[in-house]
Length: 256
Image (cartoon, rainbow, N blue to C red; front, side, top):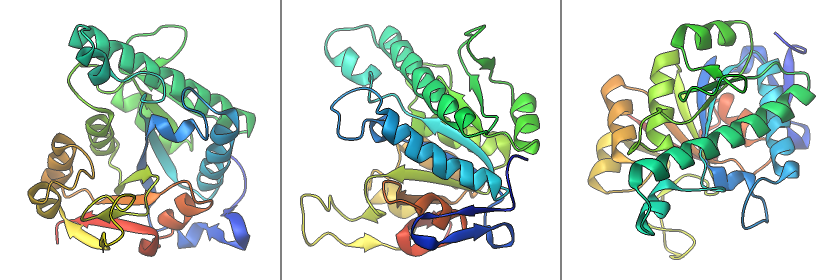
């Protein structure tokens, strides 16, 4: 394990090893989260900021899998809407997630964290192959694992890939970092009277069509009883607060 016994959070908050609620998690980040104020691509400043918090989590003893979307570079669905073959467009989207994963790996390594990128597509010389046994070995040795290229198959989103990888590594919770502090009954950026759900069930998400994650991802989580915690990851320290079990910063989706 790299580093010391605890991770410091912004504004004086500290996550100690004995205060970590989740020992192993899968963190899903949108590709757009890496853009910052840009309209496209990767902001080195944003990647570094996120990496610093992830590094603190690793030093606090958390075994972390990470899935990053590719929407800041290319979306397969968008490409297909403009006449591209959907399978080819999705493969381009998968490669976009590889680029994001490599950028995050570089930021983590620069902080002394031995992060590894495992790709569902065979990219020899750039990424390791996505093999479950290998991923588990890295996690057990304190190395965060960045799962890239989705599931390796077209027609599946990175949300579904995140749920799948979470189950494969035995994660205790699936974290979804967004720009909103939880799940609302309607878009809070449009409706001032939007109501936040502190806790809700998988059935609530599906029946109310709340768009927490796509239905395939929620169905996978529901079948396995995997909790999903949705929170605002743009607020400094929230990743570590979530790991410490602070539910006030987001919404928890569970069986009941």
